[in-house]
Image 1 (cartoon, helix red, strand yellow):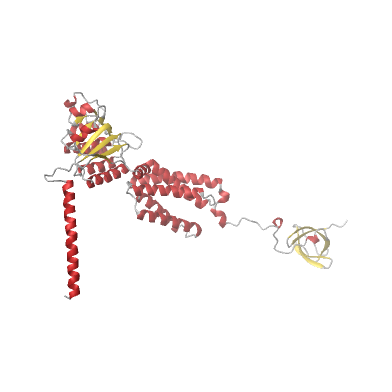
Image 2 (image 1 turned 90 degrees about the vertical axis):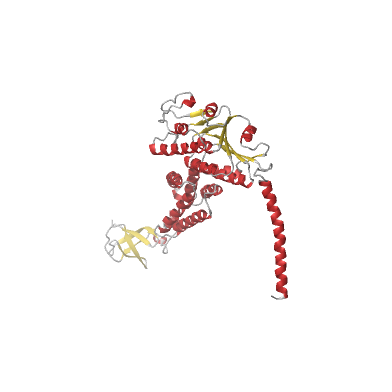
Length: 459
């Protein structure tokens, strides 16, 4: 090793040791702050409150996943789920339940309003449940999009098993969880002190939940909930949804997604078939843009969906102006529809939304095209103008000076032939009558090179 090489080696070695000396104390400091000797959390570690309000859907699930990650990064001592919801999507609730069960941070569900339907499932997955006086939990029957109770035995059995499993996980009576879902469970629960009304699902008041072990405490004081979570003396931090997350939750609702797709499809189609407005095209692109932007913020859509959508639009534009016998149009439509479905959390729901939006958009486009058919793009490919004399067009020199003149037919007119007017020989035609050669004729009409004559009867 040369002298210069050795100097470089020693320099790098010294630099590495210096960095190591800086890193080790810092790491030890962080470790000490997050978990000092004995495993007890540092007093600076917060108790994180995560609101679970309004409808349970895919946007809420994405927000809660982000909130749990933030709580983990903050080395939170406990997570309090502030629950007040009438429920929502079962698949989203199952995803949130899995998130809660897998959390390394202790969780407490604080029900200060209603934990109904899917909300009760989220609460059951928490390590402890605290209820505010006057709150309730239960009524977890499965309903469809129209709010009608689902009667499918298979669906009810699945959801009932999920509720029972969540109850058993935390040492709670699974029969009560089953009665919250299945109205035919009909089991007598002595702990309640009352018989379940046949054909009705169970909903527990705060006092009843405490009585049957479905709540550890009834209180309206958040500090008491913090104390129960083991976070007494620790700062309380509330992780509320960001404006972007609230926006994405609104956009990803099925009815909003369907409306945006309707605006997008109808706007782009109207701009393509009835060009010149500008506004439909802008609204259409805005509708699609909001749809993809909302799903992108929610974490469902990525760059590939945007690229696929843009490719579909380009193919449709090419098909309009360069005919490919429909091949490019079909490929463009497939790209558009695929990008819309791929960008959604639930592909089946996205396909349904797209189908509804497409049918409604088709009706709108047909109405608009009929109203503005004179401005349709097809008019660019159809020759509709007539080059008539009254519009100033003529394919030959007109002989207006012959109008009214009399001459002699030089050939028989059958009905076309030749006639002389003075020294001029002119090709003429009759209105359909036969005129023999040598007969007097009179010019009655001239249109371009066409000279119409009639026979002059001798008196």
